[in-house]
Length: 165
Image (cartoon, rainbow, N blue to C red; front, side, top):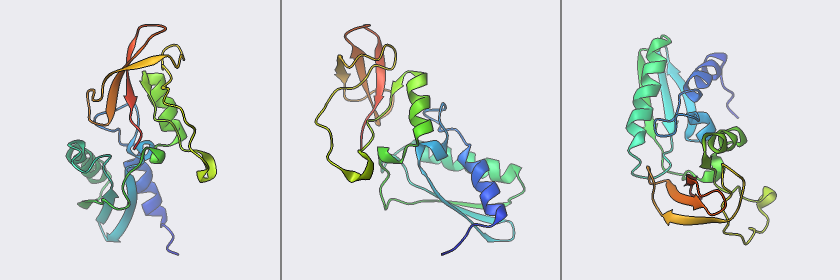
């Protein structure tokens, strides 16, 4: 088992705090796209990211933001590598990330059952504004491919829903 050095731990905190370019209310760590960070030599760091979708256009902005943060913190040589396996899943979003999405008005994806038990047979999406589960799908896609546009029947407010993957 390889343990992280103090420098790797400090740099991972810095990189993990980078906001998602499409959902700046949550960080790359909270979104679960930051896989690993490894100091590969003096002044050299390799970061592995897994995009939410294979063709996610935000991966370039994420990589640039990571490079900028590490350069600002004295790391001259940064390599950001896209890793597609294992694939990203909405289960990778942290509890704090889910909380922030809901607080921002985006219905977070439904979490998978703890321990891998049976998946509840519900298709309801809770409104982040009033909490009602009486919602309707307006469009399978919203401002980004990973979100759908919904409306609450109770309060009539539209909202984004982060789709389960």
